[in-house]
Length: 165
Image: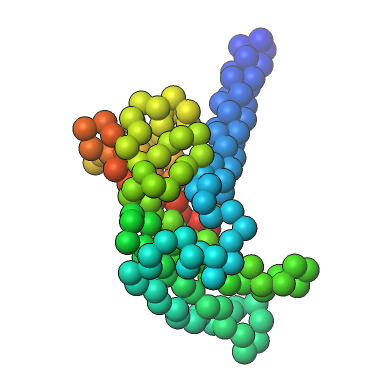
């Protein structure tokens, strides 16, 4: 019986640790791009020199005859922002990010995990990645994902992927 109890405790310790790690990855994804917090579409546009901007609409599955505007902003200096504007009945319209690609150290990332940082610092701060293959460290949370592309053990690109329904 003691062995069964020990196995039970060990198993649920691993499950709790995995859930905690996934939640931490989600939080890192949400707060990682320090330059994006609380921005409007116009404020995103003002982050730098936009080399390409597009706007397309998708059908809103929750509201009849409503459409959701999706934006793509590609900046001259190593930043791509994919987002949409969604309506919230409480706080009104707000920007929801779907993907952010960072390929320049100009854009500050939480915990100083910027482009150009050592791969080892990423692992030290975020822990063991979900996967490390093809020069990409992948961290998968409960809903979000962050990938660090690297070459010669230096981060060359960071990709934030956000769940959006």
